[in-house]
Image (cartoon, rainbow, N blue to C red; front, side, top):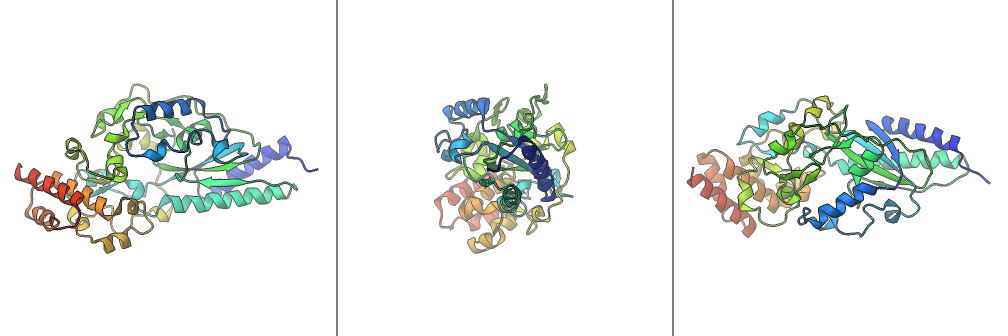
Length: 359
């Protein structure tokens, strides 16, 4: 009867890492299913309601921190990192230009879910083929931010980096501008040592620079205050007290990464799929506010921005316009949306116009 020996496992683990790099991943790690302290931190975070309307974070019982329950028979998780920051992007220039729209850098190109999931599945097929040569079978499932998986915890356990004070995974050679994906598998592969040291030290940059004060403690973000949550996850009205702090950020926020000293080591992505589309890295608020729903759907097809939907897209941009310096063109653009068939949009447009009256 065929067996999967320790030598077979070690050789396959080396092959998996080589295949991963060949598929465009910058790092590949392997860990077991024990999430220990990460499970406890998640439970504490949920008890404080820091997840806000992200009810999916509390769903699925313990499957989020018990991988073997999410995918029965799972023994190992292969974690994969892919850098996403496009080269020659003028991030700070846009952020400091209040009439331009700031879109989180990860969302400027093709949806990373599609890019990564396809390649992780290809890796799974390579593993399946290799194991079949030994007369054995293996089962796997690929995930990219698409299921109840504690991605950063698994990445830390597999040696990809540490979880910083901003709750982002930070790699000492790559910063934090990267995506994570996982391959659950039922093979007893050798595991990589976890990244046990946290190199944030006494640095408080992310806590001090967060526009809304969402980072309430080391590793702990109150999602209800986070601009990424407000512009992407929140379904209804953005709290009035937070609107003026959002500036021109209309989809996501990168401030806690922009100020992180470790991101001086980040490297530009070589993935053409992450190249900005439709000039979204330099578009003005007025330009994007003029999109009707058909235009929005056409220009956000295949991108993460589609998730917000047209109504919330206009809601976010109305706030950005309200924060911009007063200008007749901005007032005209806002006024034109007072007749838009959405109470949510109207509310934020009226707030923006009121802001300009007071300037």
